[in-house]
Image 1 (cartoon, rainbow, N blue to C red):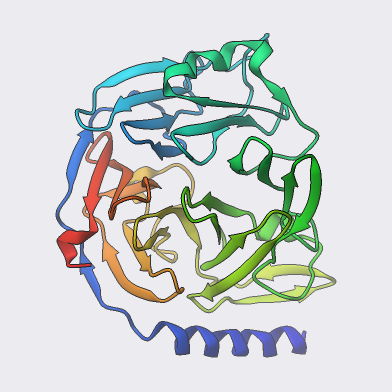
Image 2: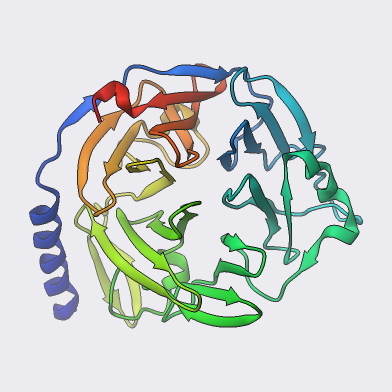
Length: 332
């Protein structure tokens, strides 16, 4: 226990020395792209050159909606949740590279690579690939080089490269704990041009950036941007009563990494979107927080194409909507 308490003070000192009280402002300028979304609760949001793709985990007849990025018009819906041929049980969508995405299912251990013109093919059983890997999170560089989260004790990820498997990545705390899968699950996102991987944790305000190699990941920086409160009892990590909440979502823009950060015990948990976070931390690519922005609407998802300093969120104003923000309006 003494060792755990000592580690907390070391981390606390590191956090405060690195973040240097960045300025905080309201990001007031925004544009509603699509309003009155037909969803019980929005899932993953992704951006391609011309389209916005939204995954809706509770829409059984069409769990993907595709919108025109400029007009906000819904143009395609696809994907059926069920147990029959070509159907999906627990689908999600990965990152976007060259306008291609992967649809994957952790329960059925299957995935498919697709793009908007061929997105209806995700219901074709012959196009679906099976895998032995746990796909609680899945990101890819190409169809033979991808990273799947497995949250094991020593490493959080497995990299699959040309059929070979490599364990990789680091957890926020260097001490191994037996409940790492419960404490350190998080967000993964690949930069579509720079071959960078960002990892941010859901229960702990922590973010790390890796450079992706052919067979390994090399950490370039990590930032524990709020001091954690925890103890380790019989090998299990236990968060303190005042442990800050973590990151809800992450997106790469051209010059920044934007993180939707939970409001540290100020909002309700669960699916109460009216109490969802409104705070975005803006990191540069060296890991420094350069700005904290307060969004005008509660938000649950982030996405960007990494080619501009525009990012998108799924917000509530008062119904579910897709909102566009431009960081250049803040002079960034």
